[in-house]
Length: 81
Image (tube, rainbow, N blue to C red):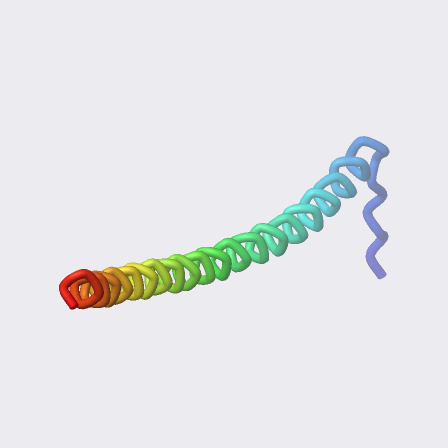
């Protein structure tokens, strides 16, 4: 039966540090992926909201145009009649 290799204190510390760094990097990679997914989702929502706002501006412009035309017609007939 072979003997187990005995690690010195420095070797043990190096191995333990490597394991901790590897674990930390996995956690950080997961967090970065979550952040990237969240940012992509937010950009899609911002685009959608921007389109909704532009539609609202267009609708308000159309209502103002129709109201102005209606007021002009009513004013024309009121003063000429």
